[in-house]
Image (cartoon, rainbow, N blue to C red; front, side, top):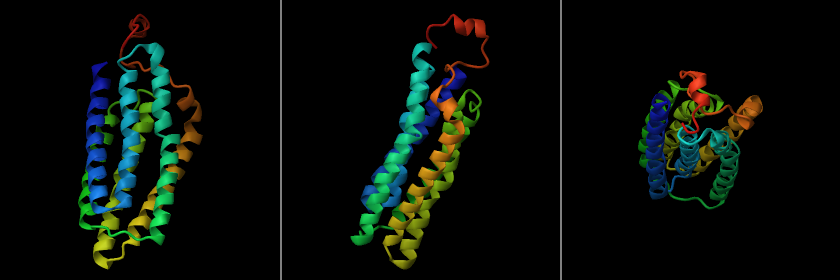
Length: 212
């Protein structure tokens, strides 16, 4: 079972670095697109933690933990995206000075870290639908994290700050659309997940375990 737990731990650590890095950089540079990506990764971080707990706590809790992870990867993200889109619209009326070089550096680093998360989850993506959703989510995040970097480059080249808010809106719309699509496709598996068990271990041994 450790070969499932370890990737989830590494994924959580890599993702936590994105949350902290983008959060600090976003507030320091006043970049809403960077803050949006950081908050989104906070949702991912909580989901990864729940997935890890599903593989170390008793089986009786694993399905509920996976449902919580799925909720954070879907409905929670839609809600947060909606709030931040509204904040971006407010910024069109009240422009805020954005330090362009910070989103460029932070966005590129976040893309690399998201790639590391997807790489470690790739090894265990076939365990169940919840882990597969987390893997696909972070794989897409590699490209999404480039958005703040693009925003920073445009701000540096043009000096027009509303591009940051515009890209933040684009990121939010993409989050909402892609998440709703995944929920519609995999709704049954996400609402009724399998037990968080290792598919490489004999089933008779797993049935005798009261904790994993």
